[in-house]
Length: 437
Image (cartoon, rainbow, N blue to C red; front, side, top):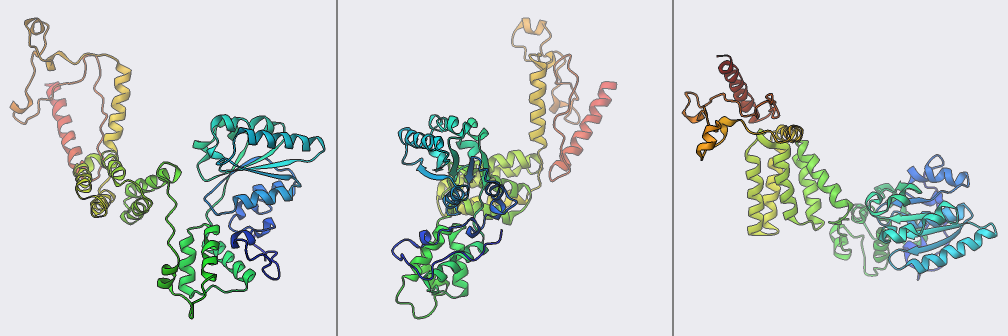
């Protein structure tokens, strides 16, 4: 659905109202950036066309149209619109809404209940919606900026459809600016580069963009269009969306891990910068780098763990911002290092074998014998001290008696593991010869 020209008044009738509110779309066709949901063949578009609206959870970042879409869905489906905010409402408020909705239903009028920030309701409060959603007393439209999988209970999720709204792209934000200028009949005092910079500063949030545009239109001392430097002087850069305890936290650390695993130092540095600019604790990143060094690099580069521990230590000594450079150096080291998960897989296989074999005793020849009884039982008998052998390798069997030898660690052909693989092959051949001889 391409945004058509919105239905705007011929002149700005209520200039005292915030610009974002005055520009709120009055038709679904006017909503920008969410065609994947609102087009005629998209989920919400089909619901409106068929006049059969189901309960949904709208999941997306701030300023992308969740509240507006809910209002327009109510109008397009001939439902009474009720709205509550989970931040300010409790069970008593919900009961009033449910009672009013039930009374409307008796006279043939449906109700759409929009719940802003629905993730802030606790489990019991979320459960209170269930019977009214099930029997059709209300059509529930919940809005959340947090991952519903983590924040909403399973019973509510099973009765709703989760629809993902995306951050507004440059084209959608540019459309909003054009509409603002059309409504106010006042062009923003920006040159071309500054206009693009303003859109970038909004970071996908349409409401934030319009609020900034309103500030700029209020300037009275602008003789020539502002450039990017002058724009920065008048408008504060928005902090990136990042919540250290919520979904973006896990998304960005995952992006950092995948970039390093994919040997892309540039992408890895970008995600590191995003996390640090968003307020992430650098020590959290340092801990994750140590884990990555062990899990994804392992013996392909045994120095990787030391590099990450050194970066951790440097940051603890210097703090921010100087210590962050050491973390960045570790990120580049890990991204450019050879990769191997052979140790990770080998350890996992060993765990499975340990659980499968239970409490098998170690072979007697590798057990210490501090008492006569233990010597009489064969502890330590025929033990070969490897450093005293000719080539430093005895070829003895160290698995439990009665258990066949198994291979868990299988080195790759990457980095240092090339040499390790060759050494293991030589030892395996020597072990086989000694066992035959």
